[in-house]
Image (cartoon, rainbow, N blue to C red; front, top):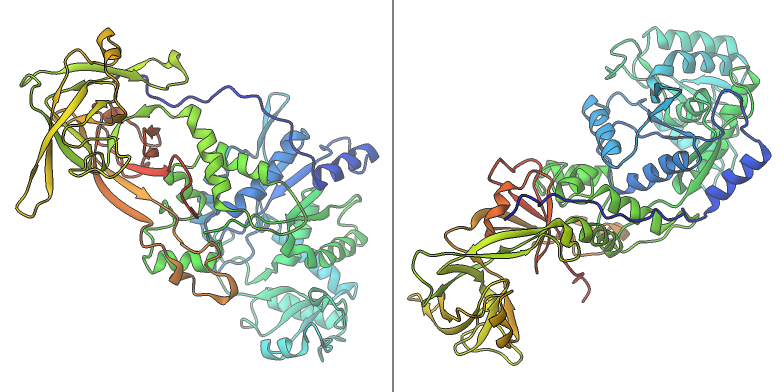
Amino acid sequence: MSNDIKSSTANTATPEPAANFLRNQIDADLVAGTYARPDLPNVITRFPPEPNGYLHIGHAKSICVNFGLARDYAGLCHMRFDDTNPEKEEQEYVDTILDSVKWLGFTWEKEIAGAKQTHLYYASDYFNKLYEMAEYLITAGHAYVDSQSAADMKANRGNFGEPGKNSPYRDRSPAESLDLFRRMKAGEFKDGEHIVRAKIDMASPNINLRDPAIYRIRHAHHHRTGDKWCIYPMYDYTHPLSDALENITHSICTLEFQDHRPFYDWVIERCAEGGFFKKPVPHQYEFARLNLTYIITSKRKLRQLVEEAIVEGWDDPRMPTLVGMRRRGYTPEAIQLMCERTGVTKSDGWIDYSVLEGCLREDLDPKAPRATAVLRPLKLVIDNFPEGETVECTSPVHPHFPERGNRVFPISKELWIEQEDFMETPSKGYFRLFPGNKVRLRYGYVVECTGCDKDADGNVIAVHCNYFADSKSGTEGSANYKVKGNIHWVSAPHALEAEVRLFDRLFTDPNPDSGGKDFKLALNPASKEVVTAYLEPGMSAAMPEDVYQFERHGYFVADRVDSAPGKPVFNRVVTLKDSWGK
């Protein structure tokens, strides 16, 4: 095989982004000059994950939307960690999130006038400012310290059909609440002994406005601030104020935050009244999250899969985490293409997993060099082939791109073929090997099957044939042979023996955790099969993350973790055709 086996991206024109309500809103704001500020871009978005887990395919949609809009409108997208929960956050998650965003094809760095700007932020950088704003809200009568127990707070909050009840501490004077808040900060109280709440409306039909908590006591070590703080701001308080501090223009999130928008606006407006921000302030817009069939995206359930060893870690190629999908062989381009095609809407819906697989095949087909692999081997002996001799055979690296050259591999007396390419008693319409039938060895010779060998149990262990020396592919004599069967093979003495992992969907149910179902009951027992395969010899040069099309079988990637020089381990990325539901 030639050395010209690396992937190369097809030259395709980038289509114009499809119109959607977010682009329409940005276009309107640009025309109106809503965020026209002399020292800042007119469009600043952000991607604000909490560093408490691994990113999954659902996050990819938000990444593509936020970074994509900033790119298309020559703006900025801030990478920000909303790290307000020290008990669940770790530097490991920060590192993997940053790596996944970069892998997906986006960056928070921008070069302006020859200088590189890095727009990487942490909510924890704003803890002093957030504390100062909380003191202001208390002093202005917009917040108070509540000393109810957690159970009493929950009981008094009400529900969708019943208004909440005012806390007995709601009318504490600003001075008393401020004193308690400062003592909370000084570490005088235990976790849960006091909490700071915004004073809005306990009778609001929107439960998120029923005096939401803005600060709680947590004697916990923070991965960035250490033990400096024993009080931490709540997410719904921190998130909008971080947006405002960063001059975000369009705060884009998924639909589950729609009911949180009134509090988002309230807290920014109150702090703007206190002189912390100048208008215009950020505005929140919600779009439908990406819901793909045959996967789960619950962090709790994904963690359960890992901790119960149902999968082999967060980067298991069956996981919907971005690290898992990368290891499986999914490409950033395919994920971006899927996100673009599924669009940005205001209505929730389900996207069949086959859409993502279709985008993956579309992306890989022009890129992936071809190779021959026998996954379920059966020995084929060419009885009349000269003992100890070999003949060179050639085939294109890619059938549609002749400029990429050819790969070269030998044919010899003993070959490996697929088990399914021989039947002692053929079924109707079977054109491959059976006694008395002729087939072409792809890129090689025409052979005629003469019989087979069996073991003591009657299992076929070798097939025998004779070849026709004037039938080699590409020679003048080959045109004299008309056969219906064409099978794959590799030379047994020259083949690369390799571990190949045949991955499939992790669940058999398109909605494995809907309606209160036990998602583990939908696990696919055939989601991973490991086989010892034989590959054409040039595949020993495969490097980690090199992707190939194994002709007839699908697309495969050299595992980025387990592959070693000269000894690649391959994962099946996706089959050549979709067979689910058929």
